Image 1 (cartoon, rainbow, N blue to C red):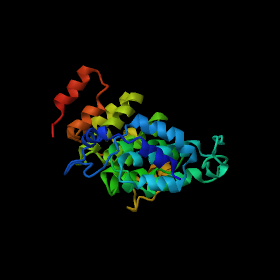
Image 2 (image 1 turned 30 degrees about the vertical axis):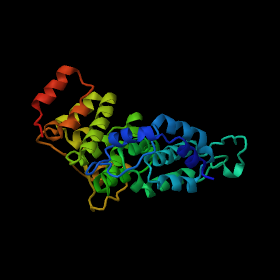
Image 3 (image 1 turned 90 degrees about the horizontal axis):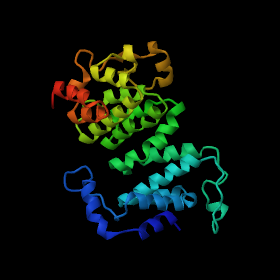
Image 4 (image 1 turned 180 degrees about the vertical axis):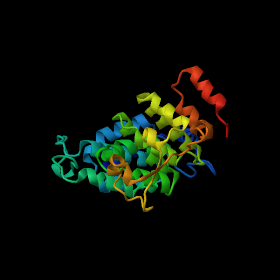
Length: 298
């Protein structure tokens, strides 16, 4: 029995469906067009996941992630995050649960890799901003902390959907929290002139978070500082494949070509206004107004 699925279905609240459908823009032509809801709010979903994640395996996750219902997909992703986070730890078996159906107990090996493989194989179902934002950096961000990060650049540049592109950007939140800002600035340059508002918001949000760590670095980025001077800018792999070892490339700049994204025109003058507003949200009001007054509104 799929306990996660069953417990989620028990929480369905038809009175909440219409409001959630409006909030997540499911109308014709909107970014969430056609999505269906059970009427379960996020805190309730988190409670169910907390109760069920230890007894949920990949077959059960498959059933939930492929559901037509938004909340079941979210429950699958939050459960995947819990499994990934606890992989390799010995978790106690709950009363009534056999060790055979406790997916985490005593497991080490490749479970974390399996979680990442599952996540990347199911991005077609990660199709709204909350599904992206609540899953990508606790999974991909954490996984890539000590690994090649080319994957995120490929998602940002060549993602099949705007959600995959958003994954490429938002996953850098984990790096920011570890004081590593370069990937955020570089991926922001890839998406700087994206056409969709949800990408503008994501890029601006991550730039703002980077600025909380290093305001001078964010200001330099907004002013159009070069990659050579400040360690960010668009990465151009010499062979055009994007397969250069990324950590090695960063450590040895001669291995890659770098191009200042907007060397002559400050970025803040060309980026979408929503992106700029998000990026400078924590600046003192006088500074904010100076940026906004100078910005060439789109």
